[in-house]
Amino acid sequence: MSRKPDDKTHSLKPLKWYKSLATGRGRLEAGAFLVEGSRAIDQVISSDPAAIIEIVSAKEPPPVYRKYVNRIVTLSQLNSICSTKTPQGIAAVVRLPLETYSDRLPDFPGDKILVLEDIQDPGNVGTLIRTAAAFGYAGAILTDKCADPFSPKCVQAAAGTVLSLWLRRTSRYLELVKILKNKGHTLVAADLRGDENISVLQGRAKLLLALGNEAGGLSKSLLEIANYRLRIPIIREKTESLNVAACGAICMYLSSHIST
Image 1 (cartoon, rainbow, N blue to C red):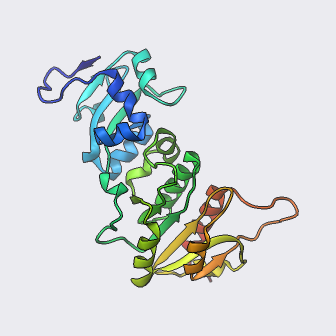
Image 2: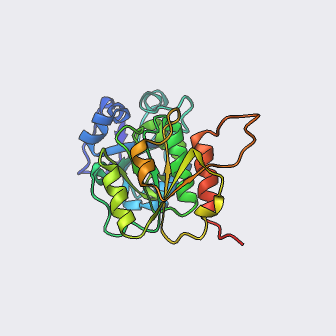
């Protein structure tokens, strides 16, 4: 593993340091996470270019990445630190936004916010974050039982969008939801026992969209404080329910369109 010859301040780290970023403890200790593939890296740069700490690649990276600290490694070394089976030959070490794990909202939380309760599949969490970014959601509140949004599978599913909106992962998520409700946000909960009335999502200036656990759905505690409970109309003779990521995508699409 080599570094740029003019880099005099960035210490050369062992491979095990990069491998540790696959674990929650390792990410917190390092204050960093790994993003794999040029498209995902480009998305991170678009959202927060200063968050890139280092580029790690198996060959000389494209010019756009050369303003960052670069490490050239062998392909086998890169494969050993990447989680994907077929890495794209490049990865980035990115600064971890530690406020993600606090129970304090941003000063300006925005209008549309996702609420994820105990969604445990990292692919679902990452896909929902990516979809939220695509439909202009400002942030997402996750319970501490949700998959970590900066875990490798989440980051991969989010395709580099994890820095495109603010995130909070905390056991005190209900408190944050109540604070936002008191500031004028409407809480719409996706619920199999809800009403098939998609209009509750449309034309909302301030919206909290809540999605629940893959098997159990939303908790009673969250449902009790919801302004509306929404059920997506589907052909129930053919399927009982939608995957939570599909449900979330439909709801976020509907919330971004004003009814006519």
